[in-house]
Image (tube, rainbow, N blue to C red; front, side, top):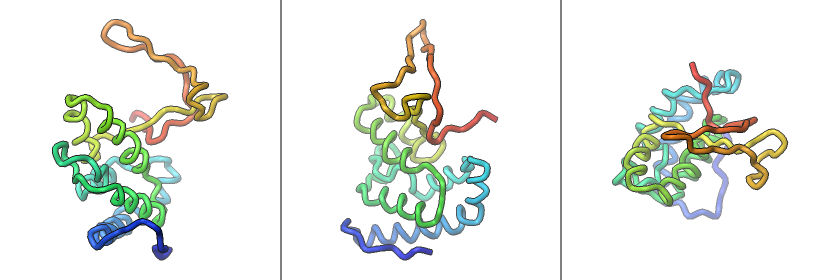
Length: 168
């Protein structure tokens, strides 16, 4: 295993104790089978749920919504340990991007409905930006969603969706 390098972030004893939890979890629950996950291009839902049970998902979410209410250093530790252990789970997108948008811009009703499910791993978030011919250039995206009665009709195509799962 790669030793943890020195870094400019100020981690304290609580951070380092959390790091040991994350590292141990990765070694026990991911490392033995992560090559299979890569080959199958799928991280099992059960891994997400187990990560949620021990507080590895969305650790900055306020306690009022089921989170731990911790600082972003905890997210960084999860991301570092996933990388050090070769775990291909998209926790960064889930915890650092999608979740933060909902915390910052979601309605109270949306937060109450979704954040506890993000924290527990019951709901796995995804982002669909990449399109044929545009990559991730958000200004060039052509996909549209138009309201049609009580639902939306989505037109367009995507070439990659981070954390997407194929229906089973």
